[in-house]
Amino acid sequence: MGMFTCLRSIIGVVTLVAFLVPTASLAQTVDLGSDSISDTGTSAAESAESPIFGIVAVGDHPSGYFDDVPVMPGETVELTASLVNQSAVPVRLQAFKVNALSAVNGGFLAGERDDPPAPATSWIDFPALDVELGPWEQHPVTFTVSVPDDTSPGQYIAGLVVQLASEPLEGSGVLSKVRAYAISVGILVPGELTHAFEPGAPAIEHSTLRIPITNTGTYLVRPSGELEMTDAAGDRIHASTISMGSVYAGLTTEIHVALPEQLAPGDYHVSLELIDKASGATAEVVDAVVTVSEPVEPIGIALTAVRISPNADPIAFADVAITIENRGDRVPAATIDLVVTLDGEELERYPVASGMELPGGVTELTDRYVPADAWGAGTYSFQIVVSAVDRESDAVTVLTTADVDDTIVVP
Picture 1: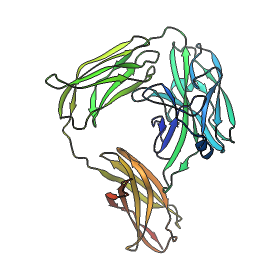
Picture 2: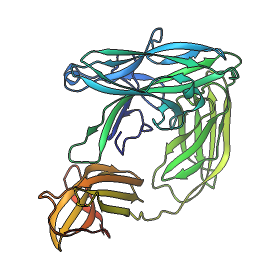
Picture 3: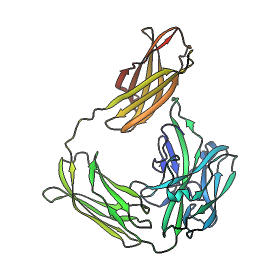
């Protein structure tokens, strides 16, 4: 997987990751804000030109995933999933098991491949696969689920992911995109089930009201209800309807509500009444105080670490490692250039990344640099330039530059 590929990304097509949840047709996606499934409208022409693939539950599972498969403590059941290539081009696929998470605002979200397995994930004997499928070919995979003897009644969720081999993005030697599908594996240990959830303390960060929600029961809940914010005088300044997707037993997620950036600084009061309509379980937040801080000017982009070093002696290539911290708003499209100087004269400008998104927080990049005309004798010095690119006008704005301490001397 590429450095910027993260399976925690939202289910749907995004800039670096396409992460879909299929049903039997494979041309469907799931909205993380709900558990509903809708057709993507993939055309026959698109099918012929690009891979369409997925993983589906085989057998009596009309949803395409494993929904509440009953397994008694101490028992083992056998299930089958199928990797499917529903396109006219061959594909190479990797498949593996992952933890299940509850996404922001509810819904199924697959964990990352290298996360330590949760208990339910460890019960699944699903092999890590690397297979090649020809056009319209399927590859069934039979696996077992073994529930330990001392397991309490409840619903337990894990996930299965199939992903396409990484494909380099045009114009960059470091970015990659990975298209993937995921399905949930729901295991139901029969017995008395409980339905309960608790909200945490609300907080406002970056114009978003965030309220933690923890499922304290043994079965999923889908809280819904009404939220209200009032100012210090008691006047209502915001009201919204909350409708969450699944929040799984034992997991915590957050309700996110976007607020206007122009909301005046000060203290506000938040009240929230929620109900899981399927079970009748309720919870509430009563008059919780949240604070909108005084606005501060973002301090933008910072190059917090840059390392350029020869791979060997004599040198074949230079390893480039860059750490960028975005302390302001998301940059939709950025270019990171390595400006190379030989004995004080600019040699070339090498694009480390082009058209990449810089989200808030830390981004790390690695690449290998070789001069266009091979290594010549002399002292090489370097500068990093980070620029923002307007996609509509192609205007380029330099955000930051930094001279690199490292030099490379070629005798």
